[in-house]
Length: 279
Image 1 (spheres, rainbow, N blue to C red):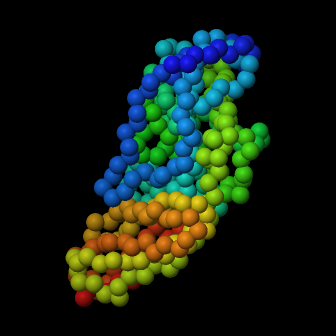
Image 2: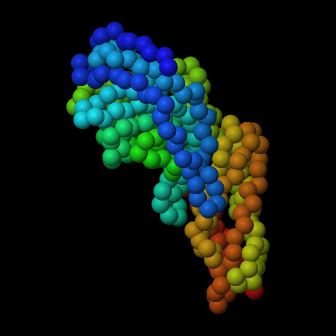
Image 3: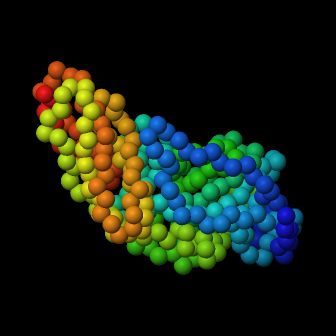
């Protein structure tokens, strides 16, 4: 494993150490889909035992903190949607005219790791635009997890860093050219009108359709289905770049004595509904 030493300069209290062979993060799971795909940079692991540094670290480097704690920024990516823990439409995160930059972190000895990142870590783009308040995709854990920062779709990153500010001092990880490319996903899609059968027998399965015109790069579209027998349910569809895709949604009509039900699909920054009669 390669070792290197940084000359002195940033923070007198933040020694750096080898990230090592960190354990892999479990893949996110739920009954209907997977975590939003991201374009990821190649992970690196380098080290230094010098207490100070002359410039930013690279993604993959780990910093030692007080109290036998450590923290590393590993790799970066981008996503149009983020799926988090929760239920119903609270799980889906997608913002109109914005996309997510994801950064994979590896803490050690930090129990409340999400709060630690919320309070101490900042993403900066182009030396002036700063972003905080991340959301945390499913699949993370105390040893490795992603944080997703919402940024404007029309913001083109030329430089990017994540900085850590704690009582131990400050340290900064700088993205290289491959990392910059990984976070520069073009997000540009438009959701059409929901269509469903005019009528369905109570308790029976049916298929609805939702067209999505993807004018940007490939992405995974996520939505929550509401007002059906097993609602809320999560659906997903991989959308090729620069193509329109009809998302087929398999659902079950509620077993009800009502004459009709309202079938709704919610993708966070928008939703569509249609009334379906009960036969």
